[in-house]
Length: 299
Image 1 (cartoon, rainbow, N blue to C red):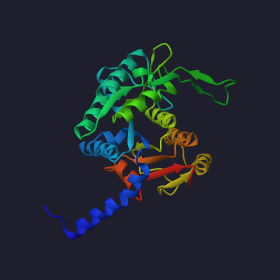
Image 2: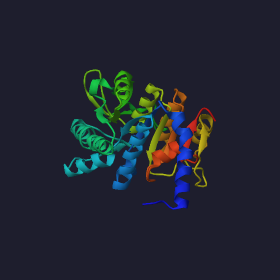
Image 3: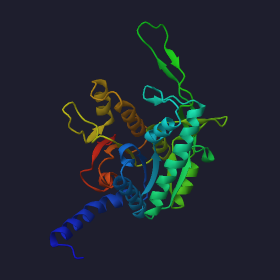
Image 4: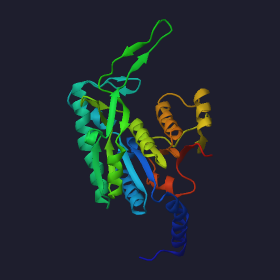
């Protein structure tokens, strides 16, 4: 099949536009949090896998951290185990933790690994328990109302936060030409398992690796202003101001704070990108326009 002159010209323009980015990011590490809508359709899943393989092929080192909340919820429902949430976090007792490990460390992780490998990559699946990759501690949640003298401590079970990341393991895998795919399950000092928010794990992994980019796939076009317009390039100071004036609120706050903290601790830039767009990862990395919101200290 021969391309038309118009199609051939456009194809050449795309390659030409991508070349400076390929050269700029060669040898650099990019951490991608994959989940939500981007995991739902075959087209988006295939596009994501091909993007990750493309990155590795041109010399970029992708590290994937994935979620799987809907899949966990579905299995809990089938097992007649009630799902409860506090401040957006799943209350995780020992029975729920068993399901979380089964779904994230087994089903979801291996599906992503298989998909990347099917498209020519060398992916290897991990949980935070492998070689103590993600050391965790129990997350303390408190709540206070005006009538309380002291805040109330709420026990949400085996929900954790990242205490440390074993970069030696990740460095070894990356240098061996593998693509790490990480399920957000941490391990405590006594070997106990912890369910950790995937955005938080991705941010801490990016910090530990001093990654060039942290990319968080979402189900919105990006961070928006009060008029619904996507904000494309923001400094950390501008993000702080948007939080202070209430432009950023609710469910978006934890994701933005995760991105902000990563940039403040050495990650060159963080990106909130629309996982509903086919090949969103590739478009964000290799094109001038991108498909979401960039946060950096270097504007």
